[in-house]
Amino acid sequence: MSADRVEIEGVSVATGHYIGGERVASADRFADLSPIDERVIAEVARGGEDEADRAVRAARAAFPGWAALGPAGRAPYLRRLAELVDARVADLAAVECRDMAMLLRSLRARVINRAARNFRAYADLALAHEERDWRSNGTWNRVQRMPAGPAVIITPWNAPFMLSTWKTAPALAAGCPVVLKPAEWSPLSCSLLADLADAAGFPPGVFNVVQGIGTEVGAALVRHPLVRRVALTGSVRAARAIGEAAARNLVPFTAELGGKNPLVVFADADLEAAARTAAGQYDDAGQVCLAGTRLLVQDAVADEFLERFHGAVDEHVLGDPRDDATTISPLIHPVHRDRVQAYVERARASGDAILRGGRRAARGGLFYEPTLIAPRSSDSEIARDEVFGPVLCLQTFGDEAEAVARANDTDYGLSGIVYTGSMGRAERVGRAIRAGTVWVNTFLVRDLTAPFGGIGQSGIGREGGDYALDFYSDLKTLQVLEGSVG
Image 1 (cartoon, helix red, strand yellow):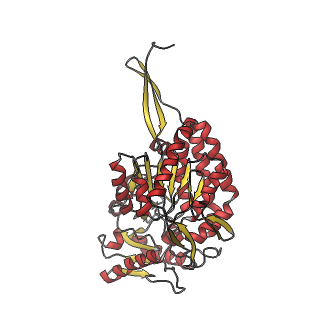
Image 2: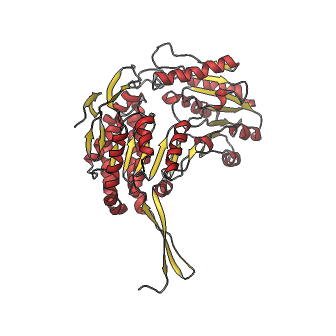
Image 3: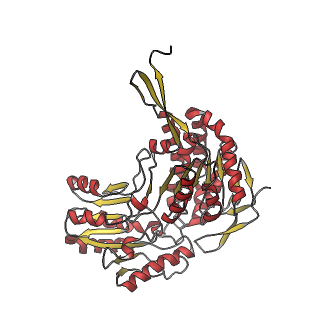
């Protein structure tokens, strides 16, 4: 049974699953709503136990052949897929913009093509990996990577296309067939990724996409006994549930979760650059896990920083993400808008000071004003919880020690941003902040070979470079008695 297709911004998109090289429909569907106008743009297949089992078994059947190709045999598939992504940037950007409302110009200029770079990078990294050799106790030893087996990959609703490739690329390069489960609030661009994998000639079952609700088909996937790896980008609550399911089958699990990240501004910093970076944290309506949502500013420059910050925020334009003049898009879904608003209302009721914004935007819909809140204490909910919307907190500090203490006063630890004119301070504070990534005088610069992940409630494990390839592999030590073979 073939699944239906819908037209999104002039692009034909399948609304069914992609399993074993074929499009598959489900009896049940769920509504996919566009944040731009809150209209239903597709009725998408709602998978369950049967679809999950079919996809995992397809991946398991494809595993021996895909693993046997080795890095050199798999690399051409990844490179062809990268070429196809590059050729379809405009289409992919248009669909993703309509589906989750990220700014169209950002998708076209930097986000979608980064997905192509992911596939190319992991094709090269897998080829470049050198097995470790040494001699010990009269034996010759080598550490070998063995592909682990079928991998279930669960991705979030923000930047779904690019973030899905951040996990699928190393899994495929390492020799693991994948079953990708996109978020139900923005599933369509991942469906296009399945079309591209098909066009790239991936063997049936190597790349699968199963649509549906996380607590239904997602849960069925992660508890399947044939799954050998599980990777998630999502919420702490989802990670706990998925981690428990993976643990029952003793399946390694990695999770990149949220953050309540500090943006620390010292008196010796370039305040204009710092203020503009801070104002930029409202990009994508604040729906970015790496965003520096806790502004920590040294007392001596707090007033000047705020003046520059407000000036930069005033330049933002809330509007249709397809319009190049827009800088802040709507929130993803009415449920999420209500969640963001509830955080702000609780902060107001508890005595936290609303310094700007704090309400739904006058234009209506899913737009929310850029909001800045000064919490009454570091224990305020708004200072501790990830809001995942256009809501920042402001606190001040006196000296470097207090700055570090405030930066680390969180249950999260995904990223940090530091602005300073001192290399010594950059080194000291960068080392002292407990987070997976710390940027100094810049933001969102990424190297695919560097480890990426979080501390505490920001996640488990690391992605990037050899760290990701090792996760999707089982490591084996081969030992041979010296002199026993010719």
